[in-house]
Length: 285
Image (cartoon, rainbow, N blue to C red; front, side):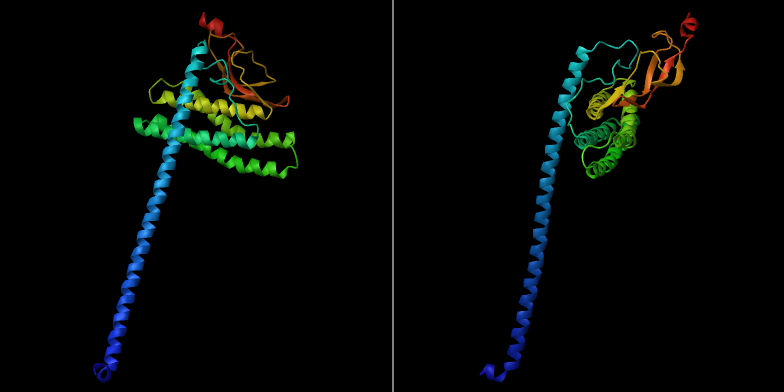
C-alpha cells in the first residue's frame, strides 16, 4: 500500500542511503590507503635503519683492525731521527689492493667516505675547528675521486685493449695525482699535529687510506719517489726552499713537499723538496 502510494519518495530515500554508503566506503578506502602508506614508510625506515646499523658495525670492525695494524707497525718501526716525518712514504707496509684501476679507485672512494664522516663525527664530539678543517679537506678529496671514476671508466671502455701508456700517463696526472697530493698534504699535517684522543684515531685512519692509495698507483706501474734524507738531484728533484739544520748533511733533502712520480722508467714529475743549505754547519757553529 505504501509502495503504491509513495513509490517516488521511497526510491529517493533508497538512492540517498546508497550514496551515503558509497561516500562512507570511499572515505574508509582513503583511510586504509593512508594507513598502508604509513606502514610501508615505517617498514622502509626500519630497513634503512638496519642497513645503517650494519654499515656502522662494519666500519667499527675496520677501524679496530686499523688500530691493531698501526700498533703493530709502530712496535716494529724505530722512531725517525728527523722529527715527525718518517723515513718512508707511508707508515704502513704495502697493502693488498685490487689489480684493476677502477676497482682500486672504488676502494679508495669507500674508504675516504668512511674517514671523512668519521672526521666530522670527531669534530662534533670535540667541537674542534682543526678536525672540521681536516673533514672539509677529506670531503674535497672524496669528491675529486668521485669525479675521476667516470672519467677513467670512459677512458677504459673506449680502449680496445690496454690503455696506451701516454694516455694513461695523462689520465693519472689529471685525475688521480691531484687527489693523491691533497691526501699527502693531509698526512703531513696530521703527522706534525699534537697528539690527542680525538686526532690520533683520525691520523691512523688517514695513514691507512694513504697507504692504500700508494698501493693502487703502484699496481698501475707507477714508482713513487720519496727522497727524504738523500742527496738533492736536480734531474729528479725540484727545490722549493732551503732550510738550516744540522740533522742532515748539506745538500740533503730535508722534507718532501710533493712525491716524485715515475711511470715505466720515465719521469712523470720531479719530487718537490726542501734542501739543507750548504752553510748550515758553519751557521750552527
